[in-house]
Amino acid sequence: MTVKGFSQADFDIFHIDGLEARMDAIQTEIQPKFKAFGDILTEELAVLLGNEMYLHIAKHARRKVNPPNDTWLAIGHDKRGYKKHPHFQLGLFDDHLFIWFALIYEAPNKQAIAESLMTNSNVIMDLPDDYVISLDHMKKAATPLADKNESDLIADLERLRDVKKAEFLVGRHLHPDQSVVKDGQALLKYTKETYEQLLPIYKLAMAAQ
Image 1 (cartoon, rainbow, N blue to C red):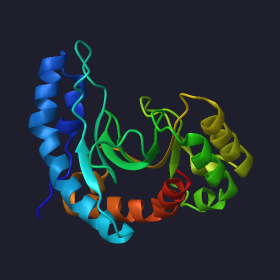
Image 2: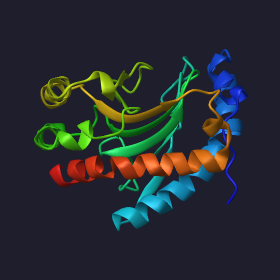
Image 3: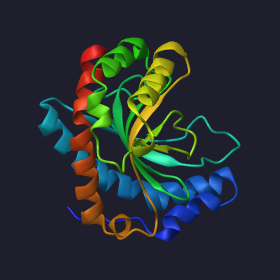
Image 4: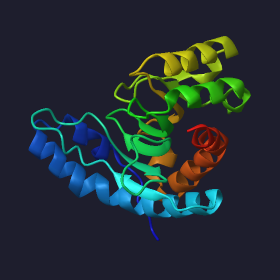
């Protein structure tokens, strides 16, 4: 299957005023690309994990006034939804593309998962230096893993354990002008490689929950 990369025009969609107009552009321009990427990545992850995985594309259905600042696909083991479980994401803000292992605030078993990740913190610390960590999926900002020592990471995971609304995401950011973003096949390969490197974290999280 041919997959198309993301152009500057896709990122510029987040500058369109109005919920209806922006959502129309997201549905027309971005979501078909998510479907093409997601179908392949979901199958790849299912093979790697040895169990069914399911694609979910953000619908932003709860929004009534404010247009979304980002949009994404998510892949997880539950056909009914992904937000309560460890999952993988691929998505866009206006200034970067993100590829995540994600554990967001709706996950009910964050305490056990955080404890497991603290015990096995080397699995995160040993990721390549271009990985970043976010503590809030709604914000653009992320901290390079290379700027964190193990104590910093443990503090992030303690927050995940102890704070009800805390989140933990680890993965990669790409800028719109990077060639890999524009080349669909290259981005597919890069995303698959990223997910493969994040699989040990996903497996620990799934086992803990």
